Amino acid sequence: MGLNEPNTVHTPPTEHRSIEFATFMRAYQDMVFSTAARLTGNDAQAQDIAQEVFVRAYENFEHLRESAAAGGWLKTVATNLSLNHLTRYRRRWRLFSEEPSVPDVPLPDTLLADLSREEQCALVDDAIARLPDHQRVPLVLYHFEDLSYQEIAARLRISIAKVKTDIQRARAALAGLLERRGISSAALVEPLP
Amino acid sequence: MRIGSSESEPSLEAERRLEQLIDRTLADLPLRRAPSTLEARVFDEIERRAALPWWRQGFGCWPQIARAVFLAACAALCAAAILAGAWALGRIGRAGEMLTDSWVRGLLTLEGAARETAGSLARIVPLEWVYEGLILSAVLYACLFGVSAAAYRMLYLKSELAGRS
Image (cartoon, rainbow over all chains, first blue to last red; front, side, top):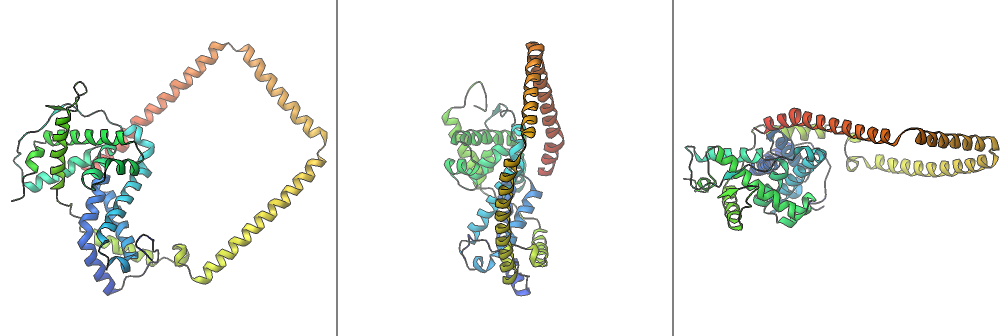
């Protein structure tokens, strides 16, 4: 059975298997959680999604433990589950969720807030989470998942023009949100000490 | 330089610069740390699913005998449904032949009366009333829509944003 074929056999965890799986999980849990959290913009939902991803990984553990593509498999499942979650619960409310265009904000230059690098990163993550779904999801798929405009349009079943517009607005909104918190994007790209 | 202004569209250069800025910002962003409870949650869920009886698990987990019995029962049910359908159709056909004229005539009379009533109403009721009724319905529908949207924004979106922060 390949990795793409779901294995629904629920094997009770033995001690050895549990230890091995726990090690496997620790190696990937931050990546899976980050993917889900940035796509959904909600930590509680991201935890549910990450849990489901690892339960599926456990069902396929015989193949994943030796596979070099395990990380890619986990990331794909996390992305798909997050998008499914968003589609299932948000489609009917998309009309209501549309927010007015991004307010006029100056593009940041080199403003540096008096915050540590970790605090700035946390604020960027928070700013991403605050974007409306229709802006955040294409932005995350483009910048974090490295999908092209065409791939995003196909995944979200929207036009390429809308993808481009949403990403463009998301970038402007993100820059605006950061600016309002006293952080410039330029300051963030400085390397960690 | 202004971004997002509805009056002056940002230039291509500004867009490119913003894209590079955001791209570099996000590319350098470290992974979020998964909650410490995640591991325990996953193992609890695995144990819960493993403890489920076989009939509550996926079809692939069922014993072979149970799967064979289930498939045989499904085939038998399908065959029974087809036979029952054919039998019912035959009965309806025979019943149709035996239908007395009174049934058909009664139905036709009812249909004619309904059509006549609708026609009379259309002649009596002024057209303005119809338009006003339609406009009133549309306004009420829009009000309901607006109330629903406001309730969604106030009750649901607020809690969503609270969850995010």
